[in-house]
Length: 364
Ligand SMILES: *[C@@H]1O[C@H](CO)[C@@H](O)[C@H](O)[C@H]1NC(C)=O
Ligand SMILES: *[C@@H]1O[C@H](CO)[C@@H](O)[C@H](O)[C@H]1NC(C)=O
Ligand SMILES: *[C@@H]1O[C@H](CO)[C@@H](O)[C@H](O)[C@H]1NC(C)=O
Image (cartoon, rainbow, N blue to C red; front, side, top):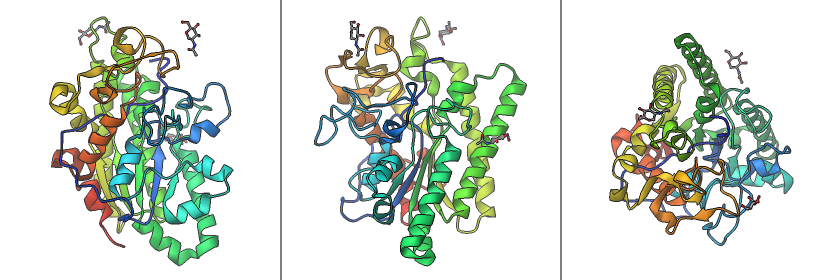
């Protein structure tokens, strides 16, 4: 999987009636986002290094509201973090931490909307795409420093209430699946153990810093992205990679079920990305898609022969809303919108043990 450095967008769910809260009346005080390229809204644009994955050129952002404008989102428009934030009553995802720092606006944003630490290429393990992203461990450090500054401005009591009621959106693991590539059952077991223990430790750390509501997007069928399918002569999904990811997803699910009763007040909703993508892969037409295996922006077979990212030169599909995939790894804006609706308020099999909406409405 060399070359695939960024990650799968949670690809869509079942068609569900949107019951989104209207923008202007957020149901949580703020949203804090930690994750990979599926959630990145511009952090990587502010990271140095030629191998850092960035979505800062056309045709990224071609459908961005008020655009076209590449913003660092790995999408033709909004990504799933934007749509989850919209469902929570915000205009879109909170701004990227490094953008806020550069504009000297971190704390005003943290206190009223939240902050996004998500970074394309990031993994649960520091070793995943090392040096070219903000890994989970560093995202935690940035959050801890944000929290200290918030407390200096507002005092610990008010900040503790704000954080307990805020929505913590997490999405990690896909880059670790691509990068680790274990060969033997013993390697698989060792990697699963390291991944699950590090992820649980990170979630426990956030809890220790005052987070209570965790909306977590689990890994999905990473073997079905166009960039992986193109490696197979028939364009089939990589079943071994999907099994590896499904095994990890199941362990995350049981780790959270074990963790929850040990942490008083801890609440979570875990999104099953395998279930969420099932409908779009098995019957794309029912959701209004003409393609669920090819990149809208790309070249060659499945739009995936010209590298992972969409480039200025690439050919675009005729109808961007009719494609599940925007580039060879990430979902389109339309797929992200449907996916977010499913997690927020969709069929029960998409989220465990409650949905994102029920999580958001908890009060501390
Ligand atoms: C992850 O887990 C391994 C093994 O338990 C550990 O050595 C490493 O420091 C952990 N942390 C990160 C961030 O990779
Ligand atoms: C391509 O996919 C098919 C169907 O899953 C599988 O049988 C075949 O082994 C794959 N080929 C390669 C080279 O992986
Ligand atoms: C655009 O296409 C030309 C010809 O195929 C190629 O040489 C060039 O590197 C491409 N530019 C970019 C930015 O991809």
